[in-house]
Amino acid sequence: MFTLPSLWNIIISTIVFIIAAWWIRRYLDEQGFPHGMTRGLLVFILAYAVSWASGELVDWAHNKIYGVAPPSQVERQVEQDLNQIVKDSGLVLPSQ
Image (cartoon, rainbow, N blue to C red; front, side, top):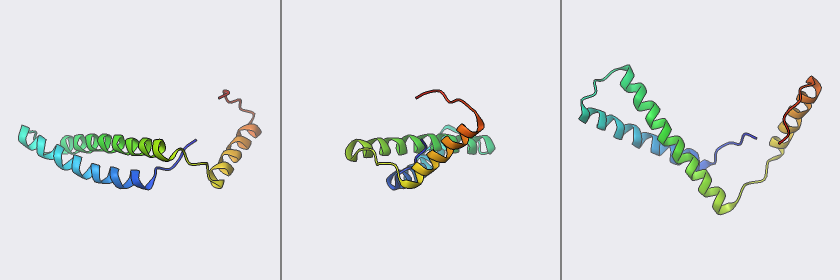
């Protein structure tokens, strides 16, 4: 089931994104890579990947230290509603 990222994930991955984008831009300047849309897209994609990885690492560490949080009432209700929709539509889901 989809879960929202923790607050630490959001804070740290945002900081990492800013630092990674700055460092990648500086590196590409040193290499003489010309400015343009391709360069901007490259910086964004690489900074996003580093930021996402750092956020996953934060969530992994948080789960190792504190354990996985129990699902909230809203998450349980959404899961029940989705199961009911699937059941009503006649679809068969693979067993988990």
